[in-house]
Figure 1: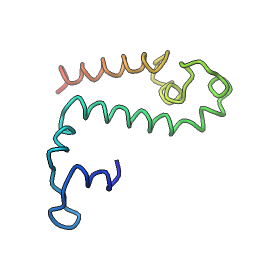
Figure 2: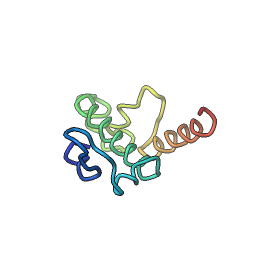
Figure 3: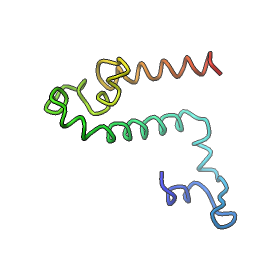
Figure 4: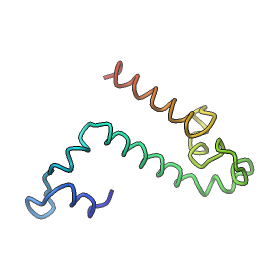
Length: 102
């Protein structure tokens, strides 16, 4: 999210000081905020790993969904499978953290 996007969700009180408006309430501790952070994080991770993924002999020329740039980024975390397997492990661990690891 860039500064121009934040201006839509906030209004300027003073130069470089912004206050929330009603649109920004959807981004405060809500499922929409969690989904937004998850998806932007996944895109960032996959794009960060894309150059290494493309030159890797196993991942680069594969059309297998388990050989995507996102899975390449997380290959050291022992998560095998597709994006959906990753999301299942990710969501399960975050639910456990929210419930038990305050």
